[in-house]
Length: 277
Image (cartoon, rainbow, N blue to C red; front, side, top):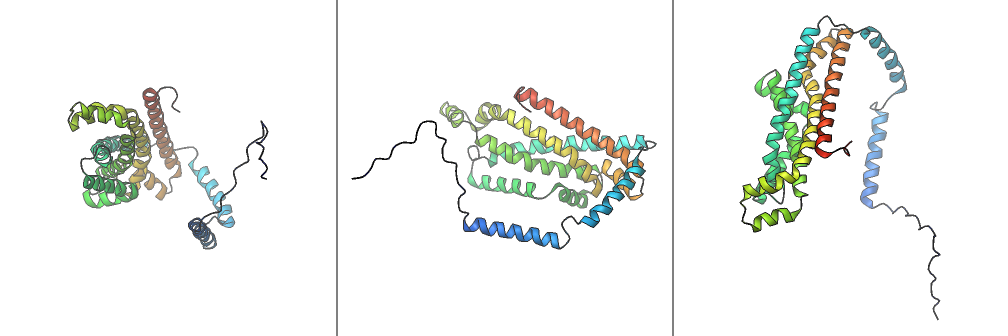
C-alpha cells in the first residue's frame, strides 16, 4: 500500500533552481570562445604588463604636454566643431526620415508583401552590420573628401539603427488597433497615419534621440577618415605633436557630446514623462 506524500510545511522556502547541463552546442561555443581568448592573450592581443607599464609613463608625458590647453586656434576649432554638429544633425534627420518608410515595409503587420519585407530587412541588416567608419570611407571614395561624405555615412548608419527599432515598435502595437481601422474600411495610408504612427511615436522619438547621441560621437570619428569636421583638426594636432592644442579640441568635443546627451535626455523625459531615466 502506497504511502501518501505529505505536502511541505507552510513557510518552507522553495528549492533553488539548479544549473542545467549545457548542451553540446553550448559546450562547442564555450570551447571556441575560450580558444580565441587563449590565442589572443598568447599572441599579444591581450594586455601585456610591460607595455602597460610603459604606456602609463607615456600617458603621463602626454598629459604634461597637454596641460594647460592651448586656445590660440580657438576660432578655426569652433568652425570645425560647428561643421561636426551640423553634420550630425543633418545625417540624423535624413537617416530618421529614410528609416520611417523602411520600417513600415520591414514590419510584418504593415508590409504590403513578403518580398518587400525581405528586401527592407536586408537593407536594414546591411546598414547596421557595416560600421559607420567603413561607410565614411566608402562615401569619401564616392563623393570626395568633406562633410558630405560624413552626412551620408551617418544617414545610412542611422537608417539601419532606427529602421530596426522602428519596425519592432510597429510590430509590438496592439493588433486590434489595425484590425479596427480595417473593419471601418480605412485605406492602408489612413491606417498608418491614424493608427500606427500615433501609437509608435513615443518609441520613435526616443530611438531618434539615441541615434542623435550616437551621431554626435560618430561625426568626430568620421572626420579622421576625411569626412570633414573637428576630427581633421584633432588628427592634425596629434600628428604634429601639438598636444596642448589637441587638449582644447578634446574639451570642445566633450562639451558638444554632453550637450547632445542633455538635450536628448530632456526630450525623452518630455515625451515619456518623469519615469524615463
